[in-house]
Length: 428
Image (cartoon, rainbow, N blue to C red; front, side):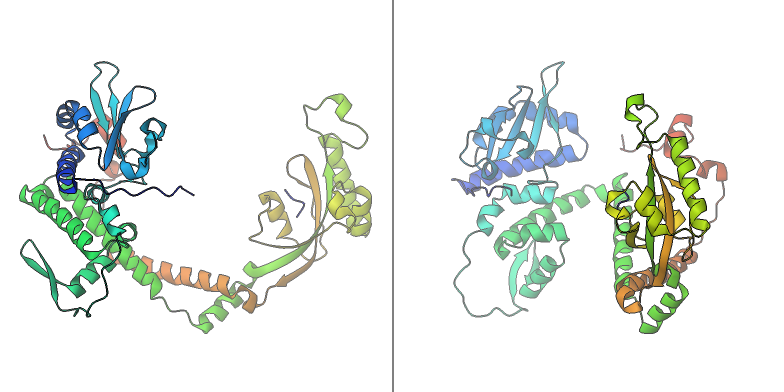
């Protein structure tokens, strides 16, 4: 306008898979313990195991000291491949152990890398060697399996082929993607491990302990709200009459303006005197020149002629200052947008300053785009209006009675400083 691949990693199954999986499950149990906030216990248990696990667990994990000598990493073999571990990126680490500068002990940092494991779910996939299993060739085609046939019994509960399909298809997208190439046998193994951890948590009463009880309740409430909002959005009905009525009522929102401009540049205040020549004005001179041009134009002078004579924009001056059409969505400085979209056809603006330049603007044509060309945009607006109406209706159904305004105006940080409330985040 004139206005201003990741490499494909080798897959390794490793020898002695059963024993290795048991060692790794032991490791997963330790990680689970740390996830519940018991980092010091984790440290005590891991401080004498780093070297042991670093060697014994070399399949499918390998251990190395960081290049700087201040930490240790356990990396998946499939990430490391056959390369020298010292050449691998520590960011590939499943788990990172850092030495405390004070006492040289090893402390874990529980930030799992996105490409390996961000949750217990993905850690279990690694520990069971599911990646290698999932890539194994499928069995030869056999007779079709009835959807109602019981194909597995997990912890005493029968699952039919249909039920397993429903579970897999209903997984959240991030987990569904991780398991889509996994055969059902591997999936059942992962599912049973998660079920086992969940049952142990319930057995220990974790769902009834704070802060987990509140976190579970909030997660459930948030999940249901998101699902309902998604359904609400997908079920919105927009008729052609709705589109036409909105378009007619907001036609100015879909106008486009053909704009011409004369640019008057000026030098920066800190520019040396030598830089301010006869073709580079100071700000006051540029403003005076722009005002003089506005006076001439309002007196009847031809805009294209004055643009060719005075404009400092070489791209547009040869076209009489013509810049083409703009809409309200066009990305231009706000000062110019405010000036352009309040002009009527043929009207001349006052000088508009933006950066080190004054603009003299005029609109040579205003027209509304036909509905056919803006139908998608109109549809988005109408759907947005309808959705807001639904959301406002839901908000009105939930009553709020505020009893203590002083308390409610405080932030959690302020409450901690003034000791207004004391809520332990982790039970002692």
